[in-house]
Length: 285
Image (cartoon, rainbow, N blue to C red; front, side, top):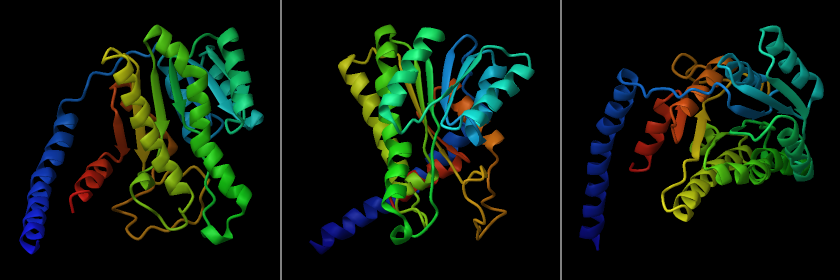
């Protein structure tokens, strides 16, 4: 038995040694030979949480590429500000709808309006998310439920609302914004981190499900993005031990990376890119 454990340990070490250069080479190769980005002009892109931060920058970015943009946010004022900002740039194919993505009836009702007034959504970006950075025992029951409802359950409701038309046409793209905390638990993250891990599992499962039921013929794409800490204003006074090595990201650069990942059909993309490789390597340590 001791010998078996020793052999298994050596196998794990060998796998780790092989994995490190593989992932480094893979990332370097992608930098040198990037995948051609597909055209999104004319696509109907719906973005949740479009009133501020990453969602706002996503809306601006997709509009600049010629897409028809549908902005969803629970805050009507900031959502309209995003729409009006885009219109001032000369892009008029943009719409704003107030929607509480944690409320399934609200999601289905507004989704029906979007279909009638704009058309079938072809790119869905589930971006809305919230966090209460405090100790678990300090979180109220309502705060816990709110994080799960917005960060997890909302994805189920939007998938239920928009995926059927994509399946019918065998065309579309689902993008979900997770976090590096999905595989890197953080202090104050007892509720937030599991919610982001759930997104990862959900996207992998629905992608496999469509592949199996379509016998490999599904053309619907799925992209899960894992940003590092983003300065969106949701969390303040967050201290980094190594600020030069692990700098906080801006909403603009994260949105740009998300759009690029979607246009290049990445299944998984971390921001910065090396985080995903580190997480994969860590599984063999």
